[in-house]
Image (cartoon, rainbow, N blue to C red; front, side, top):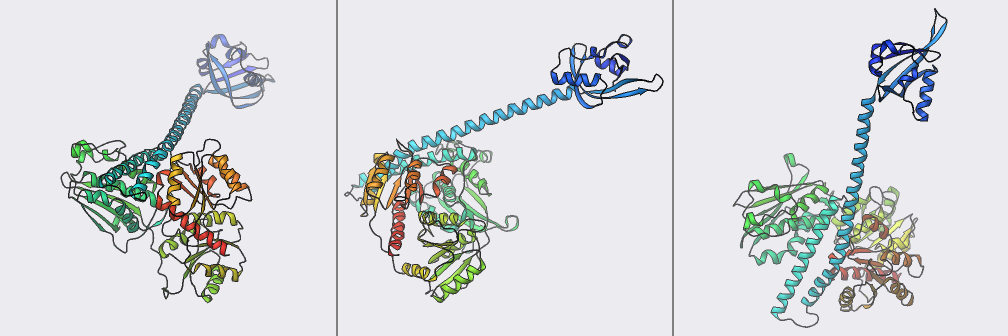
Length: 622
């Protein structure tokens, strides 16, 4: 350990060999020299103060002070004390130090490396963000004309404007099919990019595997019939439900089936089966999709899950598809906390298995007599549950209770009650989120929902699809009166609709669809015209695009909702813009639905309007 001592005048009186080697000094010459010979000439003010403190003999413990080793500046960790010399009755200073130059150098290298890594990560994240934004913008530009192509070809196939020849129908089918295929490619590319950027979010709810699979099969019937294929489905009645995003689940099944249909020869067989897992797969739901195609060589099994890898050359001597379907399915399964596996033997077909975590089946409920309407009460307060049960049972209803939001959604989907009483302040899932999910799900979208809560926000409840809003404590007579109004069948009524989109073809398409149903439609092409039209002739509903040439759709929503005269008008967003989670949150409180133009179809729009008719008619009766 280097040691050095000096007197009160700062001259060195002792210096051991380690100190001499550490400073590059000659031990025979350094004695008597001033201590400053081992310190730099021009240190910073802070370092100079530390050196002065050291030379004055003040106690120094664990202080970093630079020193010289020849001409090289080093860093030492110094400890110094003042010592009394008993014999001479004088005082001198003594110090030891540890050369930490290498440690400091390595720390600086690590620090610089971390800074470079952080900079690289920031650049990578920014590039990823820009890529997602670019693709989102491009998807808007591509989806808008595609929506018109798909929508008008579908409208013409309905022959609402005259009969078509067989040849014309076939041409239109090809246009419609090609448009849908192109849209699928655009969507897959955007989904892959969003997953890579960590910006794809799922809306998971309890779903029935059988119901969702049958929807896919119905949509793809023409594809496998065209090739003369047999499609066998074997899904047991006691299969557990799973928690999944319904649209993403159907997308995964579609991707796998699409591959099976493409690669299986004419007249082949496809089989879809499912089972509750056992053994190592206990607590899982397994979905198997098998085909009698050419099979996949062992050396290519890993490749099918890589983006843009096409196996057409290897399997059928003809490339097919984009190479995105299975890679996207694998990534979506990871987001669902599930797994995807493949078993295949060359020449004997392929089986792909999706493995989802299962949900515990709903508990068995007491059967009703089938004549009394069932009311689902979603409320975690025991006293409220008892109150509602008593009042509603006496009035001729059967009552089922859900303790929290997630349970409420599960029971609503499974049991399809006549009406739902919903509290907003719920554990696990807020009442607003429950209402959004119920409105978006096919099974529950038309079930009347009445909000009963201490939260008084009627506009928000109505905008999300509730038919009424009661503030606790409730008026028993008024509640029963509202439920009684729902008992008769509610007939539709014509609506005054305002369509806002800068794309003329989209306005024309929506106008055509709704006028065929007897609704009155006004079309405008920018935000300012929308606001003026609302002020002059308030519509029953507004269909709004977000990408407008003057002011954005977000600003239009904000302006309309801040005006007492227009704040209650329901707004449906139909846009080609791929919304970020922040943008969805920004809109959710003020609109009743968001539909991407890629998903736009006649039936969906008309179903939304039919539900709105019922809501408006019920409100007007009250």
